[in-house]
Length: 338
Image (tube, rainbow, N blue to C red; front, top):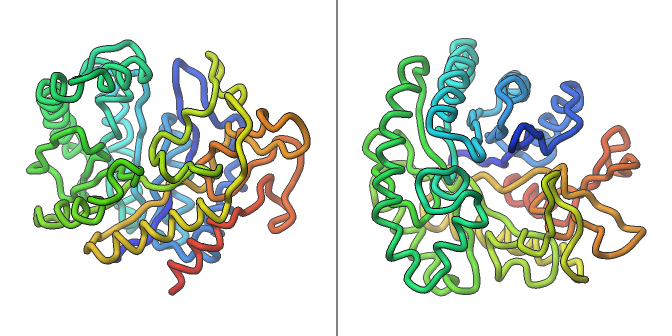
């Protein structure tokens, strides 16, 4: 692999609310230094819905010599709102690139699932449900892909008006993306039990298209059996309008399982000729670790973060930061170091 990366969450914005309540630029810089020095990453995907926060984190990463994947992540936005977000972020990414940083612009992620106008449904849950109906994928995939490609064509032209670096899009497998206007083929790709037997072939198929391939998202939640669910690990969480509330049952913690999943997929991507990988994710700030109460309140079990985030204490390994590494942290560090 050329670029050894991880995603860094600056806060996802949905209906005006930010999933990351605390955003201290000094702590962000400290965490990105840990990502470079302790995880041995060479690249970081800076994700979020607030352009100011993305720019702050991206500047820290660039100052550390990391390759920056500038990744605005729209949630439940209209096409016009998404284009305005991309235009703003493209200007910020170009300012960073002109300072000498290596910057890739990621023009959104999983648009058909995360935003209206591509699939039926007024929310991500409704759109996913529409796909899961018998024949749902076959019924929806062609029209949804056409809409995604039409939007992306407009978005890429808009981004390139301000940004002079490489451009990509974090797709999902069901979107039949036309990669012609992009420099890099990128996909959020998880191995679930249903596709485990053909996962390696799928990776090789992506690489065979001829352009560099990035896996912009992969990983597992931290409970027993989560790896078999792949991207559906968060389905054990109950949410309200303000975010995650509790788990829907009692689950066994399995940090070694999460670590093994990350390591196995890195091996598969390396073997398949992938150019860049971004583990999802460093921390998921609204899925906090609560070890002392009702097991259903320990939201970290469903988190894809390689660190567990506290809401009321500091960690032991890094005593100035409110989180503690999981087994996947050590596994990723060992793989990237090697």
